[in-house]
Image (cartoon, rainbow, N blue to C red; front, side):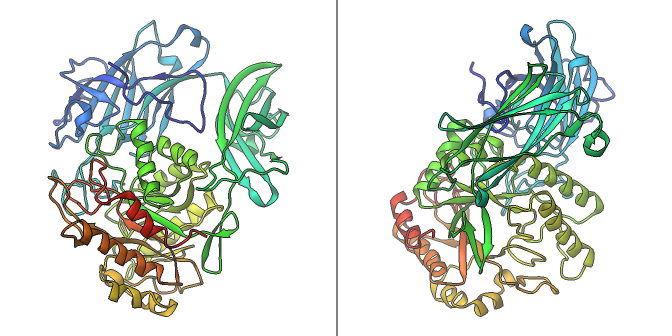
Length: 593
C-alpha cells in the first residue's frame, strides 16, 4: 500500500535525507482517560488501526466516525537507515490537534501544545537496536472554547458556520538526521528596492566550535551569489543565544545583481538558495530553500505589490475537503484547488480560521497565488485562551515568514475570543497586543487586527457584508464617507479611540450565495434558484464592489461548499456550479493594477 502524503512536508527548508512515517499506525480511543495510569506508552494491546496523517473523523483514516473521543493514542514501530548512524535523529510532527505527548521505547520524549504548528524532538538518546517504537497520546477537548479551534465545532454534529473536528495527528510525521552542528531555521527577507536579500541563520547544536556557513543563491540554475563566512560564536554566545544550544550566527545581505526576477501572481519567479555548514572543510549540514523577491506596501489607501497598486480579488478558503476534512488527500489536490481558483480570475485566497499546511504555501509560491495567513481563533476570553492563541500564532508566523505568497497576517476574526471589545478594555488591549506582536515579528507585511469589524490599530480596514442586493450595496460603497458610516451585521467598523487613518478599505467577506447543485443539503446567505440566477447574483455583488473607488480589494465567500454550507462557487467535491470562464469574465472587469 503506498504511503499517504509521501511528499516532503517542509519544502522551504529541505534536506536530502528523511524518512516518512505516514501510513498505518496502531490506534485506540481512551474515553476513560486510563492510558497514562495503565502505561499505554509502554505496554498496551492496541485494538484499531489508522492511516496517518488522517484524523479518525475522516474517511481516509479508515475509521470515519464523528463520535466524540477527546483522547486518542497512536503507536508505530520504525527503523532508521544504517547510514544515519552517528547523527542526531529528529522526530518531526507537522501538526497534532491539540496536545501531544510522545514516548520512544516507553520513555517520555516530549510534549507540545498547539493544533496547527509543528514540533520536533531529538530522540537520539532514546533509540535502541534496529526496531524502535513511537507512542503518541493526543488530547483534544471538544467543548473547550478557549482552545484555538477555528471552524471545528464543539458539538458532535456540524451546524451553522462550524464543521467537523480534527483530533490527533493531521499532518505528516517524519524523521530526519542532522549533524552535531546544524541549521535550525533561516529567516529570508527580500529587499526589492535595493535588489538584495537578507538571510539570518539560526544554528543549533555545537555552536561554540568555529564553523563556516556557505550560501549559494541561483536563479534558473545559474549561480548569482556564492559566499562563505567563518563563524566563531564563543565570545558572543550569551549575547545572541535564543536557547543554550542555538544562536543566530549572522545576517548578511546579498546583492542579486541587475537582472532582477520579481515575484508576483503574474510572474512567480523564485530564487533557489543552498546553505551548507562546514567545519574544517567537512560538510556537516546542507539545506535547500527558495524565496521570492517582492514587496508589500500601503500608500494612499491602496495596497501596493512591488511598488504598484494591486487590486486583491480573493476568495475565502476554509481548507476543508470531504474525505480528509482539514487534511488534503494528496499534493495534487492542493495544486488543483489553486488551479481552479485562478481559473475563475481570483489572484489569491484568505485561508480562513486555519493555519494552512506548508505544502499549500509551497504551491502558492510556485504558482503565483496570494494568501492572507490567519490564526484559528478561540471562542471565549480568558487568561488561558490569551496565552494559547498568542503562543500558537507566534509559532505560525515563525514557520511561514519566508513564503512570498503570504502578503498579510490576520490574527483575529469578527471579535471571536474577544466578544466584549466595546465594553471591556482588557479585550481591546488584547486586540492591540496581537497586532503589535505580529508587527514585532514581521514588519514587512500588513496586519489586519480584527477582520470584519471592531478594528483597533490595523493596517487594512476590512468589513464583512452579506447583503445581496445591488441597489443597496452600490450606494453603500459609493463614497468613502458612506462606506465608513456603514454597519454591516450591525457592528461598528472600529473601536472608540481608533479613527480611520487612510488605510486601504476592503470587503473581505461578502456574497455567500447558496446554490444546491448536487445531493448536498445546506444554506447560504442568499439563495439562487438556477444557474442563470446564480451567475446574476454573483455578478450583482461583485459589480457593486467594483463600482466603488473606495474599495481596493475583496474576498468572496467562498471557494467551495463545506459540509452544511452550500454557498461555494464549487461543490464540496470541487465541481464548478457555473462555467469557470463566466466567473472569470465577471472578475476580470476590474484590472489588478
